[in-house]
Length: 136
Length: 383
Figure 1 (cartoon, each protein chain N blue to C red):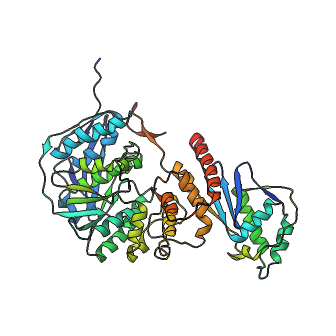
Figure 2 (cartoon, rainbow over the protein chains, first blue to last red; figure 1 turned 135 degrees about the horizontal axis):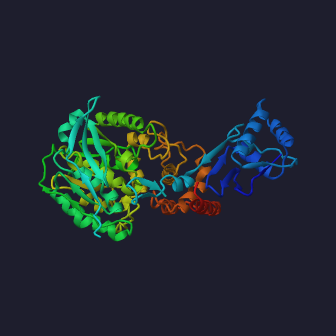
Figure 3 (cartoon, rainbow over the protein chains, first blue to last red; figure 1 turned 90 degrees about the vertical axis):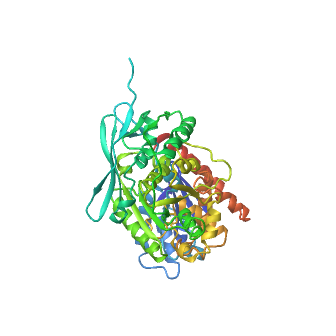
């Protein structure tokens, strides 16, 4: 299955909310309540099939949950949050608090820390040749 | 061998009529043998207000480049007497004192006596917190505002910057007319020709535009983004750090520029705006989304204001401007980024939070360490 990309990503669970911080770029992520629970299970070694089983056991689980889960994982891989792994462990039943945001499996990106550094780099004027500015 | 001193020459200003009912105040500027045209564009109804008989706006716009190059500014047209004196005897020496990169140059021009104006009083209307504060505080009083202004000198970025600017102006126009005020836009090419770090010269640019309209304004209220009640500590890379110096030096005998909104910080201004439902619904500090879209709720400007609004129990009053759904989950990371970034955009946010008796979650400190590591990495290695 997958594991957190520990080399780049700091993962934390606090009151049912997953927080992932890219320690190199400062970009951080928040996820929906169910996505947080799924990520917590992944961090604890749950495999894909066990995850799907636990999700399908939730009353009202939509039929396309497998698609949603795979799309969610693809998103996390593209952001280098997850890497492939052999993990195939069990997944506990999801608590009803995990459904605070419904069955939404989504991730939200926050780049304010990175924005600060990158938004307005120092310019220096090239006074040697002409006065056209160059970026430092 | 005597090295010839570098110079920047500003030609006589002239008016150029454009299509679409626009006119431009132009001057040809020669810097080290290269000539470009700088211009300020307004609607034709403001043509008589343009400062045609003196080089004031252009001299101010070029000050930073001139100091970086070590080039005197020579003006073919006069410069207002007070402005000329204050630039040469206060502004330039002060900036050179705090920066080794800047050279003490001179603006050389004949001094001009004051010119008349139509007696208007203006301020910006960006829909930001500072400008709304200025507008609401000066509906009447000693300098009641007559004109709401929007300037294009570097705040609108990208290929579509002019379209963004015009659309934003459409909203300014609606708001102004609703409140019986005159809307005014000034488009420029300063940011296209002079590629300076905007945060270093934002005030210089904005006030050079005001100086281009001395035939209109007798006073201009410049919204301060800073709240220090102590002396401003001059940072040559942060123009707002010496706004009091700038507004004094760039005023003339007939145009007084005042700094509005000090010594109040963002928390105080948010509290004030909360009592004005129309403006509370429209307020738009967002760094990312344009004013016709809701605040993103993620950027550093949104996060700071949302923390203060939440701390003050005012979320319902700002619910049209910000989406507070799930906000509690974001508090540790928002506080962490405020901690790491030194609260520089909103002095006092963290202090305000704790003064309200709200705890800083333990995780905030953990996240802050991660952000510090990332910032260090970004500074060392770039993007």
